Image (cartoon, rainbow, N blue to C red; front, side, top):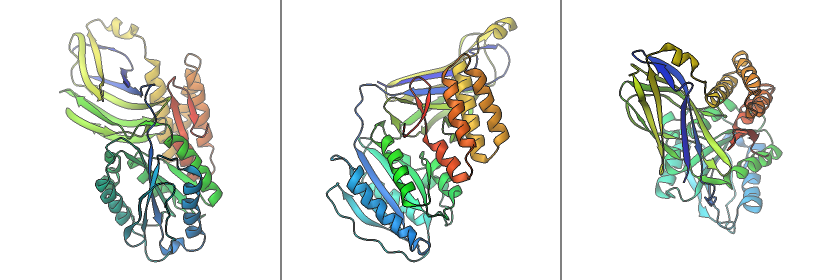
Length: 386
């Protein structure tokens, strides 16, 4: 059974007062779970801007997947789009064939996303397979509706976007990947695509829970806000008020953990052992976020700080600031992680991997580096290809 751990920065607060605090959630899989077989949906831009090197990369990418990456239990389907979208190849296994492609016409991301949802709705795997959408494009198109893109994880799929050709625009592609709980990869030429695929398939072959949905019950008088999946800096929700909510997260892989950083608030802390702010549930695992109300302010001052909350919060802060290009904020957060490494060794690897992202010379590489960062069960970070 998976495990969930919910924590506040301090588990004691002064009774009779409002509380605003940092919080974190750690979701870890069951070590006995078997990795799921892979369902791969490739969504390929075949518009006029992809003529020449673009369509060559698209063709070579499909051939590479069929010849090198799919296992005997895996399957692949292909959607192509330009001004409209269509199912180019329905589900096939590694022995199947994909007809050739040709480029022409405009580019309509909205049509592509709608076609993805229609296709997944007709072939819902019910969480029994690791679903991945690979969206290959140069990124030059109007923005699809955010809520449509954000619906992809409801089918047990996450969507990774790959910016192909030297002129790829990473900004919109990264935004789409974040909404669909995936990552952006910068691939100006086919060798970069091969590298991206290796990283993606290293993840895909170890998925034990496909785009898990986390149920969050927020108590009356409480609120959670600024929910971010760490260490990649994926924005999950801006605010969850009182009531029941469902939050989709990225795939959970064997030997890794999913983390969430958030701000927690309760209008009035009652005196006593348990003020419940929220309850988190995934499958049969449940965790309660609560705080003890104390009348003596010295009890609050003397309560220890949960350094795991600090670790996850500062990691999320550094990652989201790096995505925005706010290097000053990212550097301050990384410095705090370096200081934290004196007491939590795992903070050192986070500072190192996040620093490598801030040092990237272009935004595409920076976003790609953030997407590769994974948190191990012990809290260390590593790049996915490691």
